View: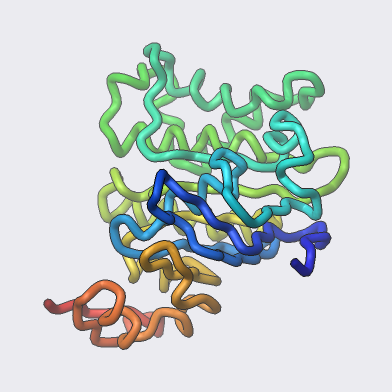
Length: 268
């Protein structure tokens, strides 16, 4: 291994994960720089969520290593990494009917030992960025699936809203953050994440299914098939029509939208 000492990268080498006799990840490498938006793509069962969980330190590996900000994940404390890295799984619903604001406040829990002087303002700012201010007093279990998803996004953003005293980059890992959202909120949320990443130098890595959303909002892409990376690089370079046909078994016709962004028209 070449090592992952770069203090401004999320870096993985040779990741292998087995579930029983099945190899879920097979020698996966990945590098994402702070300030970039990356996306993990692939069909069902390709290993996308397993890869994201491994990069977030939540999934054990059978081989390979992950470094965050130059430090191996297995050598640091979970509490320490939580101040620099927020992880959002799919459809996370609290066991109790907290208000939406209380859920977002939970994102500040890793900073409880050294709180900011304006913790309440951080929570409000994260809710504003995720467009959930109007939901603040509503019970989380009374919200629609899409509203809950946006509240949970605000919670994850609040967790890494401010730089830590050590000045190390912050990271946001999201598993299918658009799955429960309607078309308007998909674009609204991903646009907000991209802008926030660029403004603050935050690394964002997410699992998506929609290739056109990836083309529009992600800087870099990793395409998985059967647990292996079959393409990676700048999103528009990695996602070719031939690759889509080979991996997803559909025909993809490249077009440019009115803004000049590459998109695909899919046919069986």
